[in-house]
Length: 331
Image (cartoon, rainbow, N blue to C red; front, side):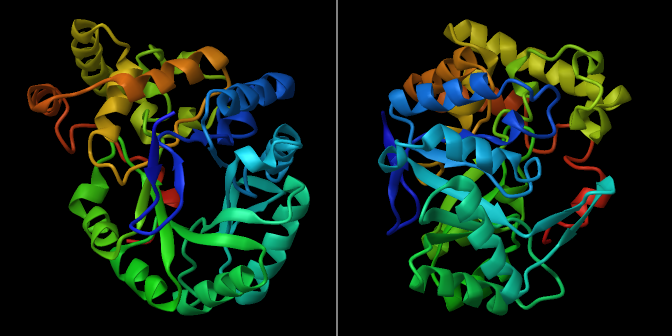
């Protein structure tokens, strides 16, 4: 397994991680717990070490699933989880953000219990709380490090100014945000430049565009009735049709190289720098193995230029989240 270092002085992890969210939340059928555990076991068997979850996935069920999967295998895992998004049990569409120091402590202890571990390797603030100074939240996270409950700290969807303020309190090891061929905002909003300046690792989530860049989704009807993507702007109406045309061009480029569209999309992310560790998610072993095949794909300057020509920054139609969810993104 190829490896990469998270940040300038951070830990070494597998060059590709595994996002576990879809096993328990948001993407349709999530009833096959045994199948999901088998995917995690196969990932570890192949040398993948970075597993990514969060307390709000389910909520709580994904951490329990990951905990069950890694029981007896803890030493093979670099375990990342997140806190800070609170769901309303009476309204699945409603959510809030909590960065209060007392909540940081209680959320971590609850995650440790669900995961069945005595420490978390990488603990992210899932979303920045605009009502709590980032210094207070990261100060509480730093105390978790002092207590031995957490090894490294991370932020998710944080703006450059927030990243700088947080990093001044305690070293931030990783910044997680959406980044892919159709979500290239970190190149333009200063996030990528900031983390590179500060020596912070960059962890792209949804590097396959929530599955769309694999070319396997041909219609919104391909989604289960409760699949979140049915309500995402990029998967609706004319936006879907326009984005499907972009993916068709990616498929053609991939076919010319003898690889899948998903492998090309992942290889493109990996080619953006050795400081990037993407975390594609899947519930199927065959897709896990296909994704790992992207590590063996080499894209030269001409390949990257061809990809950029057919899928330039800003080409995707529609915002990456509905406005209610975008309001929780630190900008």
